[in-house]
Image (tube, rainbow, N blue to C red; front, side):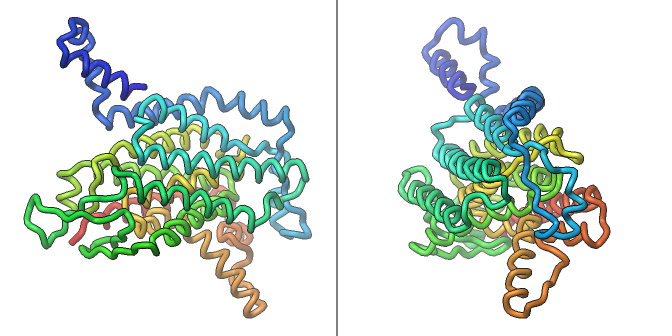
Length: 391
């Protein structure tokens, strides 16, 4: 809305309308930084305002979080027993406030904004169905793993088809260090770059399964991280904040040329989505910090993971996600190693996976695990940003 309000004022100003000079302050909305800051503020404010009402509604609907039994998780059931009945599906608060802030502050017709929000919404709906099934059946199973992976892959495929065919997203500019100042080469959205390195790998048709796997992996990694109060949303804040900055830089030609990274002028608008997610994350953390009054559930975790993975693809900084989203990667890898080790050697590497439960069972208090993981996440986000410059 603010973007179109600025466009309306600009048209009036250029046509010489008398009222345009009076409302010259509307020119502020031409700046993406202003609208991104407003998006974060709006999503945060709405989360604080609507949070108690959403929590009360979820409690009235009896959508409590199913807790796995002692037979399933042994000692962990004692540590988390008090969480039984805490309302879940709080991800609708994150989704709702982000989408409202984006509609108010961003240009929703921007292709990068549109595809990221659509992926976020689609995976949020998948997570909603999963949460609903868990609640109705009173188990921790939900939607079957194969069904969940199929729909995640389908959403990823649709997103990639869109990016590969839309005229504004299918090609980027790449300012290689080997080129003269001001020179660039056009590269396809299916290309892949590496931190600190100046060469680009054209993946061609192989980019589609790679990017689908990235969206699926990120979505599920955030889901695995969502096992302690505030852990996943805290790491989301640092990761989304870092990618918000990357999106803004990648959409600004002088900055992209200086850093020798991919550039697309439409990318800067995507920073508004990431800042809206940061604001919504802080607002949700207000109620999700220990002891949590609400859990995001798969409704939130799958949606957030999809949005982060999609932003990494749009900014062409997919490899950096391994560093910036390092906690999510660590959580997912710990599960893969644990399952692989048990199947191959009949031995477990960790006391329990994901790895945050390992530290709990080794004597760390839940708050210690959460805050230490937040610290690592913030440092990894800063480390990823430091690697953005191509040598």
